[in-house]
Image 1: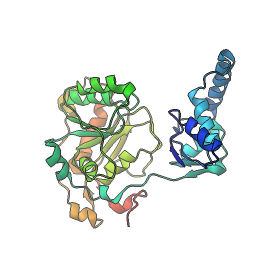
Image 2: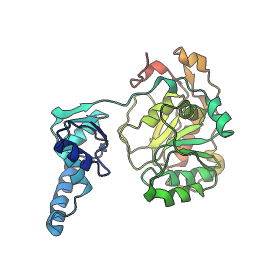
Image 3: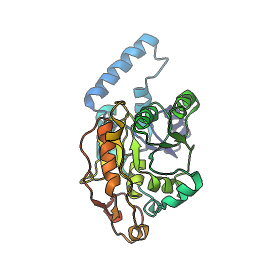
Length: 311
């Protein structure tokens, strides 16, 4: 069986499968920020806590390590995640395989008109797709974008424990919450294509598929710097920095430029997709949120992505 993520109590699922003698493939989703040093500290803290409470409660580190240890095969999204699994959790690297996220072909062919027609969202907007939670930091991003007078479209749901966070997010002027959309839906790909900029201000990511999908749809990205994602020569479309933490800058200086028109027929044939002024808008948004530098205007080719899964 396949278990997605070694966190959130999923070690119990792995334990149950092992008891039933069912092989487990575990997509770890371990932050590349883990290393030998903080792994050692976590094990020491785990032992101290265990001695104090007679091992009645496991730390999140212990739960994650247990899931990784019991899994038949562990999947990492990149080499840095594999190194984190080995160095911090002491897992044999022989059972860890690196399998990067893929991108469905329909994101490269996305038509923004579908999203515009069904939602009646007009003009420029920032987009974020993912679970609504304090860890993902939609609220911090919403407050920043509200200062900029740039509408913020949020696609995703909140767990029951985060319903108050969702309520506070919806109360921010300019926020539009659309709930969840399945990854396979054309509507989701259309939302990526329609957005002026895609934002991902979470506390940490491994290799976020939403960023790759946004780039595939021709939309520039501003995201957290706490990530293992590294795309060489991508600064024209992908900027990383501290997001959603510095509200109060001048609205006029951060106002994004108008999106440039793109030719979808050319993109399907492998022709360049012009990011144009939308790339510059991403740079201004990054400076507004605490980063530096505006991306240069370049071209992004569909065939240039190593994660493209189409023919």
